[in-house]
Each structure stands twice: as structure tokens, then as C-alpha cells.
Amino acid sequence: MIELRGISKVYRQGGREVPALQDVTLRVEPGEVFGVLGQSGAGKSTLIRCVNLLERPTEGRVRVNGQELLSLSPDALRKARQGIGMIFQHFNLFSSQTVAQNVAYPLEVAGLPREQIRARVAELLSLVGLSDKAEVYPARLSGGQKQRVGIARALAPRPRILLSDEATSSLDPETTRSVLALLKDLNRQLGLTVLLITHQMEVVKSICDSAAVLEKGRLVEQGKVLDLLSRP
Ligand code: ADP
Ligand code: ADP
Image 1 (tube, protein in one colour):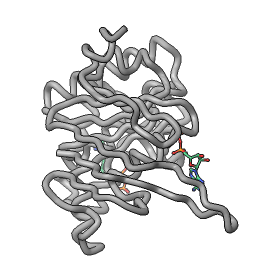
Image 2: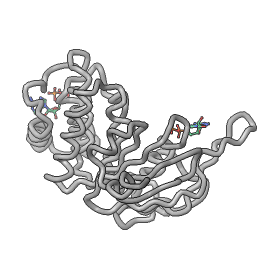
Image 3: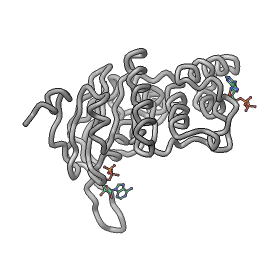
């Protein structure tokens, strides 16, 4: 379902070359929750952004939902991206729009009819437990509620994959647990494949089936979480 093969990424910055990823190969099976663990600067964010081509790898191949993303036309890539939702550490909500408007946004971009959008937004808000917040602005929400809006918006186009870029890193431990529980629920209920990056071992332990460890741009370990944890 997600297959990165031999991915390398070099950033060019003022004549200097910064290698962020080196020969990363990783496979996420359909229906899995897969965690990439690593310290700050390890290349996690670059890695996850290579999956939807927000970042273009310098080398390697990206296969998602059966398509080689690097060989798609801009139009086909736009379509392919609808199958890949993403959530962020700082939620990335539009502060001047209500919760319902934030969630409706990708559906409006996709050109769905008004009535269908309204019904789908109501369904999504119910899915994340925020039916009573439709008319509220993000500033009035707690961090956990903001991330639930982010999740509802990401799921609006019915993606089969959700990418999570440190989605719980700015939340307190209790809120982190509840957002992780929601992600696990969505994984089970919808068969959603989740690829997440985190610097917190607890996140991997609590919801991931498989995991990989990234160090200085290289994957140093990869496997089932139970096997990784039981190693000496
Ligand atoms: P992580 O998410 O694990 O903190 P990143 O993927 O953000 O790691 O960064 C990996 C390396 O790439 C770091 O050395 C970082 O400074 C560098 N880097 C990330 N983005 C850019 C960029 N746009 N331009 C130049 N260097 C970058
Ligand atoms: P606009 O005037 O830009 O359509 P609205 O606030 O009326 O702004 O709605 C934005 C989008 O959010 C619309 O697609 C609308 O159907 C949806 N929406 C607004 N309020 C709700 C709600 N309470 N439940 C479900 N969807 C809603």
C-alpha cells in the first residue's frame, strides 16, 4: 500500500548540500498502523512528506495505492493525493473559519454539491465526537479538539491512508492518549492505514503494529513492534 524504495533526499541550501535521507526502503501494509521513530533532525518529517510528494525525493521510488507517484502527471497526482490524508503537529486549521467550514474545505475544493458536503461534514464531526462544535472557531477549542478537527478534515475525501506528522507532540499526555485512541479506532473501523512519525516511544508502543527507527537519515531497524520491543 505504501512502498518507499531507495529514497534519498538532499536539500540544497545556499550552495551547501544537506543530506536528510539516505537509501530508505520501507513498506507499510494495508490496514497497518506504522510508526517511524527518531530524534529531532533524523529526517522523519522529510520521510513522511515524500509519501505524498510534498517533498520530492532526490532518488528512489514512491509507490502508494498501486501507483508510482513520481511518474504521475500533475492532474493524476492531485487525484492520487485525495487517497492520502495528512494531519500535523500544529493542526494547520484556518482560524477565520468555523469547524464545519474547515472540515468542508477539501470537499469544496473537490467540487461536491452543497447538500452532500453538509451531510458528509455532519458525519465526519460525529465520527470524531465534535458534532456540537460545528459553528465554533478553532481558537475556542482545546488542543485535542483542534486535532480532531484536523483528523475530520483529513478524512473528508475518504482517503485509505492517513499520514500523521507528530500529531500529538504538542498535546498533554492525557489528550495524547485520547487522540491516539481515536486514530486506532479509525484504523479498526475504516480499515485506515496510518503512517505516523514521532519522537515519542510511547506513541509507538501504544498504537503501532509495525515500526522503524530513523537515525541521521538512515533506517536502522524495522519490524513488528512486539518483536522490536522484545529484543535485548
Ligand atoms: P525530523 O523531522 O526528524 O526532525 P527533518 O526531516 O525535519 O527531520 O530534517 C532532516 C534534516 O534535513 C535536518 O538536518 C534538517 O535541518 C534538514 N532540512 C529539513 N528541511 C530542510 C529544508 N527545507 N532545507 C534545508 N534543510 C532542511
Ligand atoms: P458558506 O456560506 O461558505 O457556505 P457555511 O458556514 O454555511 O459557509 O458552510 C460551510 C460548509 O460547511 C458548507 O459546505 C456547509 O454545508 C457546511 N456546514 C456548515 N455548518 C454545518 C453543520 N452544522 N453541519 C454540517 N455541515 C455544515
